Each structure stands twice: as structure tokens, then as C-alpha cells.
Image 1 (cartoon, helix red, strand yellow):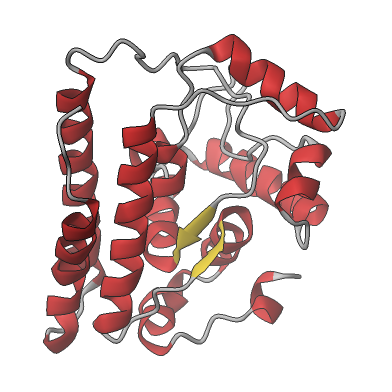
Image 2 (cartoon, helix red, strand yellow):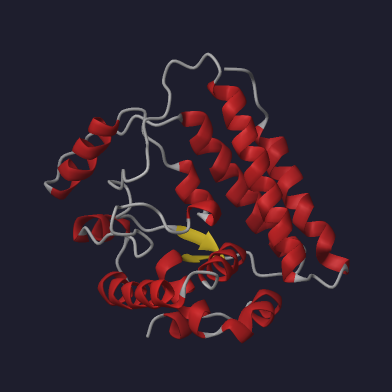
Length: 229
């Protein structure tokens, strides 16, 4: 694998958002920057895969890892909610109901407890496919398996207290973790909210409070008390 400077990538990513400090900080502009980051990352991963023997084994409907806590920035949450609002009303209503049910079951659980609870992500359809795949969070993009059966065994084993490794594409993991850190830092430097939130709780809240998007980004006023109920 060719040498890749993750530190430089983090700095460059942060700068993409920090330069918006003295602009009107329109959400559409921020979301465009996020989309550019996704596209650049996917292109870089394809380059790294060339000649890589351990190709990613994940595929549509493979949902073994979709039972974990996922941290997202507020900007990612806004991106997801805007995507969801484009769905047919009956589908959106089903997603909203699934979010309500999931949040009642997982709010307050730490990572290990959430995994043991085996509650599937609210954004999976009846086939186990991700409904928000085009705008899925950076941390979701980072999780891969080079062997789906070892992934299944690891997640199942965790329920019984067994520690089994998940063979992951390490470059993809580090790339998206770096991008997440860069986005969060850049938002903070731009005077916006760069904190992370639990995905299901944040998206559930934003679906019910669309008018709060820009104010929340500017004022960092979103609290656990607002998301929890």
C-alpha cells in the first residue's frame, strides 16, 4: 500500500470547513463540502484497492454490523434528514416510527450494551439494505469486513462474551476516521457545532425540528435533554 499522509488529510479537511467562518455559512454550502469529501474518499479507496488481496466482502443486505452505536456530526445528521424527506411519505412514516422504537430501546446504552441488545438500525429496509446509503455517515463508511463469515461470527460471539476479530480494510477505516475528525475540527474552527451525537437520537430529533437546523449549527445549543425524550 502506498504511503498516505492521514495527518495532512485531516488538516486539509478541517480547512475546507474552517474557511467558511467569515461567510454566511449556508447549510447547502456545508453539505456540498461534505459530498465532495465523500466522493474524494471513495476515489482514494478505489486506488488503494488496486493490487490489494484483501478486498472488502461487504454487500447489500449484509447487516451484521448494523447493531452498533454510530456517532455522527450535526452536519451529517442534517444531510441524512434532508435525504429522508425526499422519500415517499409512507416510507418516511415507517422510518420515523422505526426511529422512535429504536431510540426507546437504545438511548443511554454504551457501545457494548447496544451491541448486546441486538437492535438493528432503523434505516434498514425489509431486505436489510440501507435506506440512506448515499448519505450514510462517515463512521458507517469506515466499517468493513474482508470476510463476511468472520464478521458474522465476531458479532454473534460478542453476545456470548467471546472476543473474535473482524478482519477490516485498515486503510478505509483510518481514512474515514480521519475525515470525521477533520470535519468536526473544521466546523469548530468555523464557529459551528462540531460535536458528535448518537445517530438514531439526533436524526429522530431533527426530523421533528426542521426549523432548528441552522440555529443548532450556529449556537451549539443542542443538548442531551432535547434528544433523550
